[in-house]
Image (cartoon, rainbow, N blue to C red):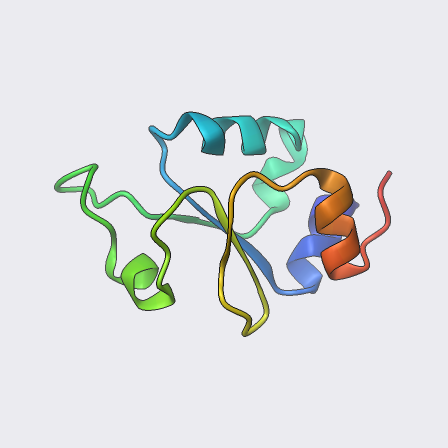
Length: 91
């Protein structure tokens, strides 16, 4: 329910499949991560080239979280921080 709430609050995670910090962030959600709005930023032609969507969002460090129209916030965020930012209740 927490991951679904993040989606309803327009929270979005930008990441790279090869980024260890992104893997850590995903792991915090366990099997519920598939409910989290996630944007893969690694280009399919070059894993170190960013996709157009991530460039347009101004994402440079990973993971980054975006909340609505705010600028992306860089770094791994604890579930508590995500809860505070969105108002979503922790399980």
